Every structure is written in C-alpha cells, then in structure tokens.
Length: 332
Image 1 (cartoon, one colour):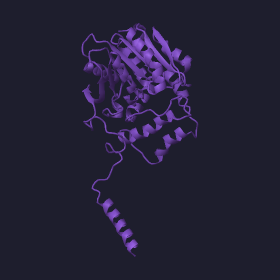
Image 2: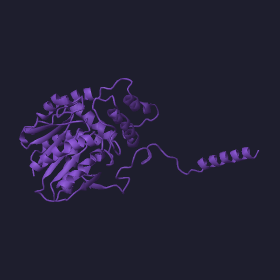
Image 3: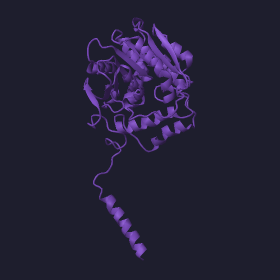
Image 4: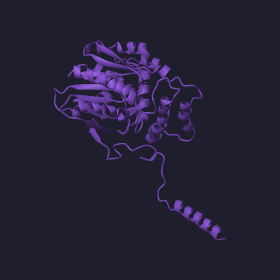
C-alpha cells in the first residue's frame, strides 16, 4: 500500500511539474532548434558593415598582409576552416566571417540575396579590417567560397594580391552543374539520403522560417559526408549553423542567370594556387584542369589523402599547408 501511494505521489508531482512550466519551447524560436545568430546573441564576435551584422573575427597582426577566408555552401560557415588560423603564426592577418544569411550571421529574406550584395559585403569586410591602403589582400576560398573569390576577382581584378582557390564546383554554371551531377549521385536507399528526407515527415517550415529550414538544410548537407558520397570526405564537418534561405536563393539565382565568372579573368595576371583533392572522385584532374584554365597564370596542386574538405581534416591540411604558405610568401 505504501509503495502504491509513493508511486501515485510521484506521478502527481510529475504532472504538476509539467503543468507548472511557464513557457513552452517553440520549434522556430531563436536558440531552441539551432544556435542563435549574432543579432540574437551579443556574446558572439561580430561586426556591422553594409547594413548587416556578421559573425566575424580576425587573428594575427593587423599590419600584416590580410587573408580573407571564404567558406563554402552557399550557406555554410567558417568553423570548418579554422585551421587557417595557423597562417597568422607565419606573418598573415587572417579574417574570418560567415557570409550574409549563413552560419551565425544575421538572417535576411530569401528575396534579398544577389551577387552584388555578396561583392559589397566582401568589400566592406576588407575595408573594416584593413590597416592601410597599401596592405596586401589575399583571398582563400573553398568550394562555394572559391567560386565567390573568383567572382570577386572577375569583378575587381586589381584589388586582390593573390588567391588560393580550393576545389570550386566550377567558374561557369555549366561546369558547376556538371560537377553537381557527379558529387550528388547518391544511392536511392543510402543512409545519407534517408537522413536527409526523414525529418520531412515531422517538421515543415516556410521559406523565411529560418530556424526550421536551417535545421532541415543541415540534414541535407550531412548527406555529403556519408561513406557512399563520391566527394571522399573523412567525416562530418564541424559547423555552427547552416543558412537555408541564402543557399536556396543563390542556387535559384544561378539556375536562372547561368553565371560566367571568368569574363574578366584575363586581366588578372597574378599567379593563383588552385587546389583539388585526390579522394574526391567527382572532381579529378580533368575537371580541375578545365576549371582552373580560366586563370591566365595558375599553379595546380593535388592534395593527397583527402577529399573535398581537404582544408578541414588533419591529413588534407598537413599535406596542403606547406604549399599554401610557399605560394603566399612568394607574393609578399
């Protein structure tokens, strides 16, 4: 009898506890499903330029040559490129930022994103951190970030002292589509694809319900890191938060406009370091040669023992960093 009474009292207390909760956790409320952005969490490092608040930080001596690191996606963040901090130990001022609407940077409506906004943001980031007009500016872009770096150089070829371009899908839209057709060739019942579509049964969100669609986007991104993915990655990338609206906006924009970011590259005579990886079977030497040929002066480098995310994991980073440093030092 005593045991029955104790169990009944425990159940009653449990019910009262849940009834007594003052606030229900809402799935689209800031911080519940995905981390807060910089405009929601003032403790995060940030700067405000070009009408937006960016998650951003800079490492090293501000008077050294500046390297602006451009992450992939569109819609990823710079967490997976933090190995690049090592460049600060070798005489470079390294600037990181999550692109507008990506990572922990401020969110905007889908209709807000254009390539010119990206150019203006990057220009404003450079101006914010630049110590003097004569300070050299280098771009280091990976994947989508390498495409953005090229697009910026194509737009403003006289502003950049050098660039490291790591495995962009393409610099013309036809080449991007060609690469995507191979890199996203998942088996119908693969684990990666199952993970990506599973939550569609339970969570729905409108285009600008950023927390919900960012969470769902992360499930799709995880499919690239499964063992059956041809991109050859060593594991899942570290990240803070994905940006679904910006990713969808730029993919839709590209499909409509069919961009060509090589139209002015003939004006850029500075040598570019173009990196591709051994284990990304969707890329390979032939695609690397085709894409990199848009640059008049290019050094082609294969990262051995790594896949697409060659700058994020130990093997790829250790096999690539010495070549990156040699290249940068040659342009000082």
